[in-house]
Image 1 (cartoon, one colour):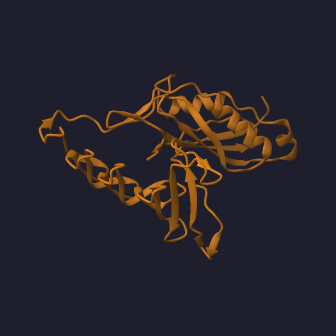
Image 2 (image 1 turned 45 degrees about the vertical axis):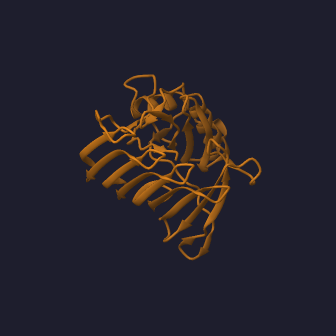
Image 3 (image 1 turned 90 degrees about the vertical axis):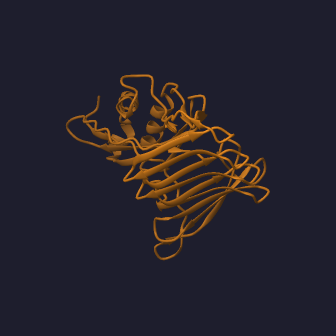
Length: 268
């Protein structure tokens, strides 16, 4: 293996920002999404319209509407690119009824989490302080208490302990420093985002921060080779989660690997 160091860190999903409409304030943008929330080049075949609006240089609100105009979800961020939630996060059923409400402070649940059945009945009630649950209750559609169950189960990688260390190790095994990048002295941090679909397959691998063509391509290739995950679940239903893999390439005398905290983002 060529002499180099790369640091592999895992963090939350990233949103690509647009050019600033004024100093320090990125311009708002509108995107069209299909049923799997993949971004489309136009409204053709779209099911959702997503609007991102910044309130400062990094934070703001992301709202998704059905093409009919009905609001699907509204999420408030402290930092959009790093997916740090701060403030209310809400979603709606297709019939217009509120489906969920969550309160966040600096990326942690801090306040209430309320889920509702399509008919409007309370399904789940939780209270949080500093990211820790203090109250948890579940109900049937008829309002009868249910045994409490965890709301969210993250995707699990089928190697090692199944946590972020397994993903770090799997991606690192597939990376080789490209010869042309070494010759050019190219180094830096490549950010690649990918989605774990409800069936556990890895999809939609894309570079969200580029460094050098062959470094970008090598990182994408390594992520694409990840095995099928055990799907993540939310309230008992398999859902898609997005991850961002920042890979730092640094030409050096030894090879070091550092795994950071895994912070997946559930795709609303």
